[in-house]
Image (cartoon, rainbow, N blue to C red; front, side, top):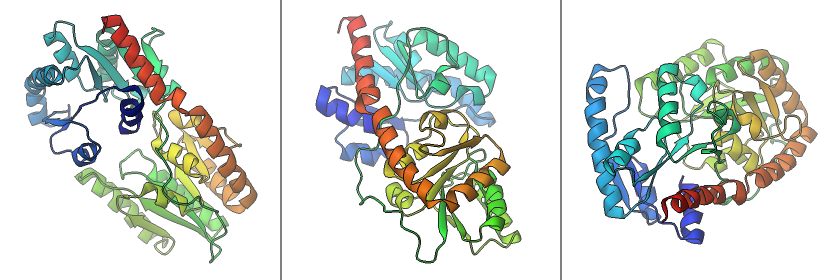
Length: 361
């Protein structure tokens, strides 16, 4: 959202205020950009009894607080950046329909628990002025209503490092990067299985995992399980694990190939970043990534959860420097055309204008 609201604020004179979960690390970044920032103690649905008991009372209370914040900021639109955040609907009810809601669907609803997903879809289609889908893969979950729009996430603002030349490594190795937080379903386990098979055919391969655990015990356990597999298989000298990366561009640009074998992605900013920054990509056909490049021309798309196909793609691309060079050139050109401003933040600005025009403001 920050990549979109920046140019909209500067070029089209919209005014934005952000409301974040209490304690969010994003506050400092947004305040440094000059945005008013507020915090609310959002409670998400979970299996924990305490959260279930608190959910409805806190939803009502936070809806009231959001309504009051909208009044203070003289806001006309509340843009919900999460499909499952229902506080905007409460705020709209309290405003007697004066406050307009735009809801952004960033998850692939097909992969969520369907009793919840169908409820959230029903609310979005009836309670929101517009529903924004980050990809056609997400769009297919909804009805054909005019209010359902696809608006792609924008490209990074700029490149901060010189373009990579992707020359052969001094030690003749081929460096693979897996850039994602350690979360079950994000595909690190599939990547590790594929790497094991590919490494047998090409011992020059090297794999580096980069990501955080988001402070969650289950994510730390998942990472530990991956590390255990590496030790047990004797791959500890060729597979590395790193923590959260502050400089994503630098991480992407210093490797030969980026892998993304997530089991479900609505869009995938990681894949978009790889293409934008000019690093050859191998991604699984799990939703949004298929829309980000042309298979065989600007990257390789493999069937979802197909470890054999993943390993074959790694071996193929690692051995073909010419194809990697072609992917760099084609990928950079493709995303700069498809995700140009007219299709991303300008489309979002036009959507805001449609909503404002309908309200007479």
